[in-house]
Length: 529
Image (tube, rainbow, N blue to C red; front, top):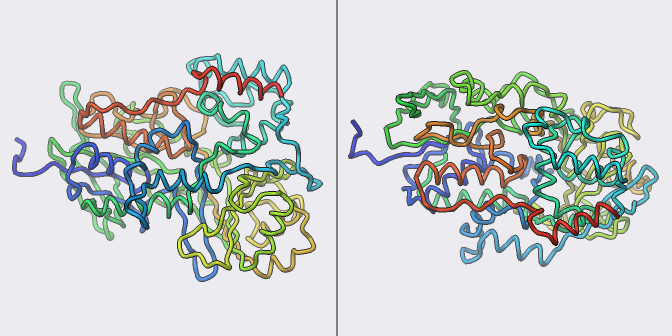
């Protein structure tokens, strides 16, 4: 019997953007009482991978920055259109992003730099006829035929040496051994970027880092409607019941303050469970320390999915995604500079003022190093005389060109030395070193969602027969959509909420770039340049 005196409740496992978006859709579109929504988060901060913070009195850090894009991010823009900024409740986060990008448009002039510190003509993608044939073949093959094959099984060595691949892979963080299916999806979703991949003018930036510009306003909006984020809570298991082909979540098992608890779910209660984490077990280093590469899954980012996967064959296979750190890990770093000398020199070198240049990739770097200079301030409360720069390396186990040490074994100062060597700024190196603090971040699973997979390795957002539960995050299967994007998490959340509540509201369709003849023509023209 259902207790008719008890209002339905919703429990969202994990405090990342998927859960935050799901909570917002429950309130905004489902008229769900905010006070009945519980977000259960293990960490002291919500926001998941959309982070950005001051580490101490001297430094700032972001683990990464997800690329936002105008045409493809339909669900994210739908969400942010109704979330006001913290400073002006009459201005939506979406409109703030539009205004900021009109004020500070992106037009990179130094997208690729060679080993001799020369800016390359990146407008010439370098694809030859054989490369184009290989690309067309990948696009033509169905995913069922591609299967769990690698990208480098579809392309020749020449393709991987092109300007196009250097820019595409560093924009989206692809490795040659990643899933060919995921690369195909990216091509189909972002083919409109072909003509502008050398300038990244299609990128849409937030005014501040994504935590301050997106997560904090979203949390404030949810809190104003009574939604509760409960920190220090690790969900360890979910009990399910099945009858006549209908499956329901019945109980959540969790740990709070070292104590075990359970939450009973009534017939009308809902459970939204985020699976896996690309930033699980992230470790930080500093000027004189090296971040640890954690290999033994210390936080709860993967444990819950591993437990649930043993309950049903269609709940996915987490080992496909967390079983090979060598193919998933890379390292990022944030420079906090108390002198403008490095930024001024980069501006002179690149022709880009801070915030207008997008990624600068050192194409010949043994680490495949890329950096971006944001427009200051990039963090809320950042002083006017403090500046930041973010970068990352895709190859963390090869010796640096200027330090001789791998990125994985380098301190923050050594990473700074490698960057200065790539730029060729020896004359200002001493001043930069004396006025710069480096925070590094090692992320064991950061590109794990690109792992080679088959159709059954990721569970559906709404598993077959599910009536009151859904799976969220980067490791669910959303046909045609692309992982490693904020859009993916928000789209999954929207689909989950609308389906479980039975809402007759259409989810914005996945953007199909090739459906527009003009876009297809411009992409083809760029590929033949």
